[in-house]
Image (cartoon, rainbow, N blue to C red):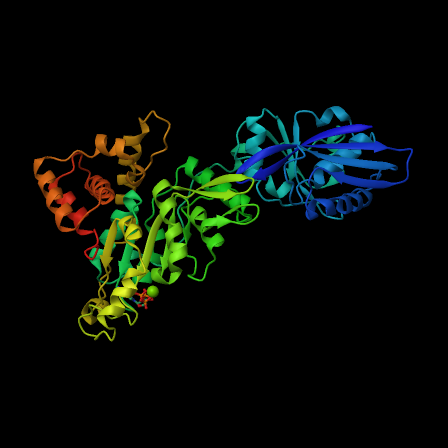
Length: 512
Ligand SMILES: Nc1ncnc2c1ncn2[C@@H]1O[C@H](COP(=O)(O)OP(=O)(O)OP(=O)(O)O)[C@@H](O)[C@H]1O
Ligand SMILES: [Mg+2]
């Protein structure tokens, strides 16, 4: 007898339906073959399924079993097919009614005792079900909250094979998971350092506030111990809350990479990723035989912090150029190319020279001028051009450091940033061309023309700056976007000369 079960495979960040066909020919010696481009983990599935069925008190069918995973040209990976294969075997041997398999999706790994285990990529799979009109999704109990983020499908949390069989035979139905149990709110991040505990450095705090308000890239340069790492690491405390659509986009990436924390089905705060400079190329931008998202995608809608920026090496740094501009990363493979979202805010920190003290007021720099230049040249012009905010972080003096007075708290700063983001969201909500623009940094040339008009005085300021700082066309546009954010923080509709002046002074001085 033949049974067909719908299951799912995840390619990149998208789910694709996989049909699991199970055929049993009982007048033959017992055997099982698995066809349809399965990988090693899928082949092992047959052993897990056999043990799980027997240990659940069910009958493993006699005869020759053929399992076909279709379409055949799609590579099948991982243990998600355990459950559909098991259900197919039961249906093909009359242990559960065939018609219960219609309009349903089955995904899950089996353990030898017949219970179900967590699988990666549940969110895109549930999304696939919704998109193709599948009504019911059967999956491991632990993964139900994640699938329930998708509206309009019945999510059946399956604790074990025996419970599933009772359900499918209508003996003891499993109630669907309640959707509204989890979509309560998008929370704020937990953080360790508050801006109030950072002494002095008012202009650096201001620069980070502007950066966070419009999702602009920033680079902190200064001597050792000035607080660059400390301040960058306290950024999560002022990042604006996520909106639900952003949270779902991020969750999808974490779901596929198997990085969703067990207790939260939905990523509810902006990611802050701080990879070490020894990270591999594939680890940073994504890659692998079956491409997986890298750090830049894990930082989607959040912050990618690269401490000691020049140490990342030219190859890694240069590959950031395309995603910094396009906000997606495209990975090419022989089978075709794949894109992952990578709309992140780049924050870098570095010393101005190898010894660290170049330009310091008290400590003498031991590097030769040529060494300093070579060090700074490790960051190419095109990369620096994409960084809107360049800030120098000088040493803090004793008086400031020992001052017991607390500065502004992160909460106060974040409230201003939230207000500025609200203005941006309202501004771009009316866009009709289908582009997703939520921050000023996302603006393209069209939006810049529409939303960043400057008056005559502003024009002459920009003209002078372009000449003196040798600004590129990109730098010109980026300066306008930055000025837009500064005006938004001030709650002002028109970009004024003061906003432009602040934006211009964040441009790098030492650009060729
Ligand atoms: N402005 C500040 N207010 C309070 N503490 C500070 C400040 N700056 C530095 N510190 C203290 O100094 C420590 C070292 O700072 P941090 O690691 O951020 O320096 P850095 O600029 O990253 O140096 P390096 O160039 O060596 O990486 C912090 O952990 C903190 O204890
Ligand atoms: Mg540091």
